[in-house]
Structure formats: structure tokens, C-alpha cells
Image 1: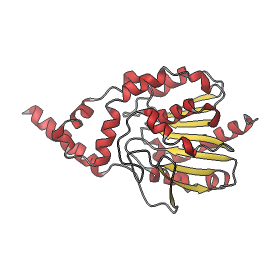
Image 2 (image 1 turned 45 degrees about the vertical axis):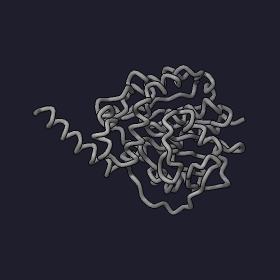
Image 3 (image 1 turned 90 degrees about the vertical axis):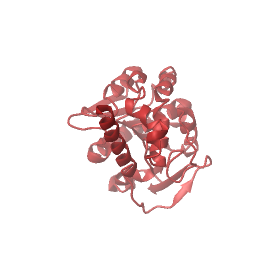
Length: 270
């Protein structure tokens, strides 16, 4: 009986998640499509030397960065691009659970004549870093918020295993089915990522931001990444009292770190 009660409770919880899947709203911007088919919106100063590319987590969408796409300082000083990752929003619907496919789908948005800075939240963090490793000459900075990097910490949880069953998956929205589909192989994908040559990023400023109360992506994920990074311009910002949704709950803090990274990237320009 206890197992039945627990199962029913979890089922209700997951069903609730399928309703409250992500923070989204309408943006006053035209949706465009990259060569890969990935949907994105573009705002800000197109004449700026800086292009900020925002990559959401799992699940999520380009509208999740609304507060950043409306920030006065960012609008005046940078070109802002927020993407729907493959599988979400207006991008191609098929699931792409491997980091390489997700990163390659964003590659065409990297400007060859600007300073490209990647901002990734949660799963968007390793996707951003993987993109930088694939095209190190086209990425000049990264701000990674509550990212997942340590393979040992990202093995499928019991609720992922449960959501992967037919009995539970029928209650989940398409977004949450895809999200769970990304979580199941994530540890293996992060193992592949950790075995790549992070030394390629030695000249790239990287800021990691993590709340010490994050119970979705353990803060040790950022500690793992900061140890793997070997460049001089690496920084770990640990924020007390914040959880996984620091991206939305402490937007001013994240924007301030973006500003600081832009100034560092500017100094590093040839």
C-alpha cells in the first residue's frame, strides 16, 4: 500500500510538472530560423560588437530569457539572441539528446565578426561549453548558470526511471517527455564532454554561477567544471540561499556577471 501511495503521489507530481513546464511569455520580437532550423529571436543593438546567445535548459524555450531580452543595459550594449533548442518551442520537434547535435544546431548563430558570449542555464550550460569546444575560435566568453557537468552527479534519478515507463509517460506533456529523454543519457554525454580537451578554452573567460541550495543540479557540478577549466579567466560565483532557478529569481546578479564578463572579453580582444 505504501508503494501505491508513493507512486500515486509521484504521478500527481509529474503531471503537475507537465502543466508548469517552463517560464514563458510573448516576446516583442520576430521569430527567425537558423540554417539548422533552430528558431530564435533577436533583440538589442545589432551594431554592437557583442553577440549574446542564450541557451535554455530542459525543458525550456527562448521566452525563458525574457527578463534579459528586455534589460535596458543589455539592449543598448549587445545584440541578444535567444534560441529554442532542438525539440522545443518552434524548433524541429525531434528529440536530440546528444550534446553534439544540440551544439551543432546553434553553430550558425556564432558571428564571425563579433565577440560571441554564450549564456547557458542548467542543461544549456554543458551545451554552451561543448559548442565552445567545437568552435573555440568563435566563442569569446561564457556565463553558465546552475549547469550540470559532473557525470557522477547526473545519473538518472528514480523519478527519471519512473517517467521513462509507459504508465507515467502517458501523463506527461511532450516537453517533459523530451526533457526526460535528455536526462536518461546525460551522464554518458557528460562523460564524453569531460574527456574532451578543455585546454582549448584557456583564453576564454568563463563564469559559473550556482546557488548553494540547488537541489536539481548539485552545486558540485560547477566545482567539477572549475577544476577542469585551466584558463586564467575562470570564476565560480557561489550564491547563498539560491536554488536552481536563480536565473529568474536573481536576474540582477546574473546580469551583473554578464556585464563583468563582457568587460573582460573586451580586454582580451586582439
